[in-house]
Length: 205
Image 1 (cartoon, rainbow, N blue to C red):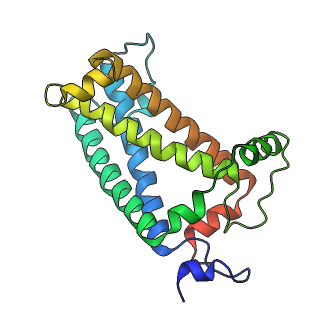
Image 2: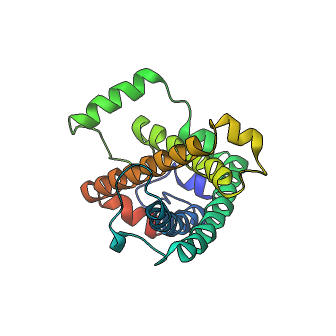
């Protein structure tokens, strides 16, 4: 019996397939490494007028932070591409994230703000969850594309111009990173409120 068929059965059915749970934790580690090393790179030239506290950064110095950042970047890109491929090929992407009607999203957002959003069945995403996860996919894509401009600006002139130039790409990259860390903070807060969602991402059922 496949994971997707199991999702329609009883309370002990699988919530997430094994490959998705493995990719989730790989991505979590990679994002932590990427963000912390990125903060250290930012501190080498804090163009927004403030610096990140050094204990929150990774790499020790600029060259070390760059090595960590590139290593994490390739992990995020490879893991993310495999995640999308597996989701699309299995049909899971369409089943889990679509449709996403605006009226349902608005209703679930209001319910979430009032603390009344239901989490009775972890096998199904509500509209807020679907929108949040789709947003993260797009945000990581923006992080990677803007990061390519910062890394190989001469080699990607069209992409650089689409982002408004090198300096604009730095701000886009920092903004996308901030959006990602905000998502992670909200994600962790929701886990604290609904701890069984963590168990379903660790255990098979």
